[in-house]
Image (cartoon, rainbow, N blue to C red):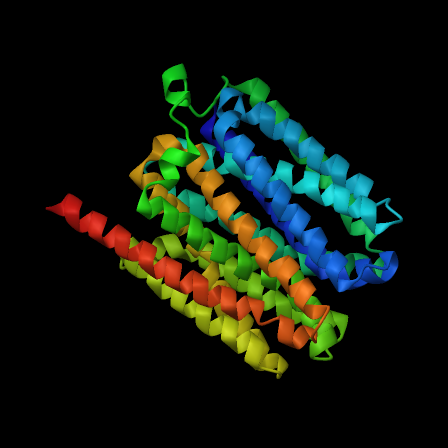
Length: 394
């Protein structure tokens, strides 16, 4: 397989997936108004995405390595495009919930393939390339608010952002299919005896990988608690206009982009465990600033710090785990996706359920609480990495 072509396919896909994941939170006020969705229904919508992601990660982590990665990538991308087109035509929120479950399943399988392929194609630069891959995801999240605002200048209809994005994914799927036909087939492992060793139970029994899963849980809670609810929180809880709320939210996605683009360079001066603890601390400070501030400028700074701390954490957590045991790449990726998806459920549904009984300004405390959890798990994980490095160095 041509390394550059495969890398380009995955990077483009992750950019589009970033837009897919983030736009639901941005469109939520319009979705809720158009389809009469309550806060609880909105929370269920985000929960079903994460439930689907858990199912997809569990199945994909164990079985996706049996198939050619790029052919699977193309097929799954077409599935996402079809779902987006179908969801843009719904007239009742129940159909939207059904689409959310399948979308989560397909997206998590794409994440598993992307992480595994990049980790195996770029062994010498694993942290840097995985950081760039997740940078492309964050670049998509950064582009989404501006993409939606631009389309809204033409027609304020939440359906058209889904349709145009579906068309872009179809074109990307065609490129993926071309890459699959051009090179030799590529799967995670080649020997049947190695396939049988890809077990979640075996991985999760190791304390360091258990901490990886728990940190991923906090990561999902903070990232998608912010992504899914901040715009609604800023509008309903702080009285921002839709345009101002999207602009302040863009500071969060900008921080994510900057962090994922630059964190690998910082490894020249920081050890992985020390950089991990530093990023987690910046993230926690930003999370509390966003919640406690009411001034748009301070909230923007908080969102920027939150993104700067959070952005580099996920690729750093996962690449450090793959450095320990790269042969279990699909399962390690699956562990991260499952952990983060559970965190998404807790933050997304928990915020919506809480907001049903209390103001959204109160329910939004789920994000700072998730930040405290992530800081603690990332710190414990970094200690494990430090002890492991010291043991190997002896």
